Length: 102
Image (tube, rainbow, N blue to C red; front, side):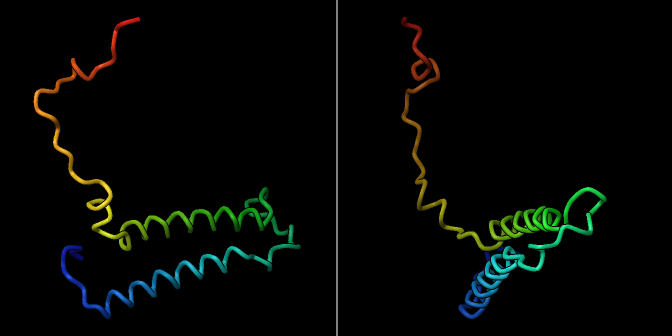
């Protein structure tokens, strides 16, 4: 999908609702009340089920964040926050380098 194409207002609204719903679902999945009192079964023979759940949850959060950055990040955010600054003419590394004076 080309990110430079303009989306209709309905598509933009649907995308925002999708990402908002995904974030709410991740928040609700974090409250794993079904694993609070369980120690057994051990996952891979070592990890309690609650710890294994949170390890998988952390990986899932990482994937969701990567998807949010890739598909939901505002395109003009970098343009407004960091305007282009031209390098002053006549400057060189020798004049901007660290000073050698004690």
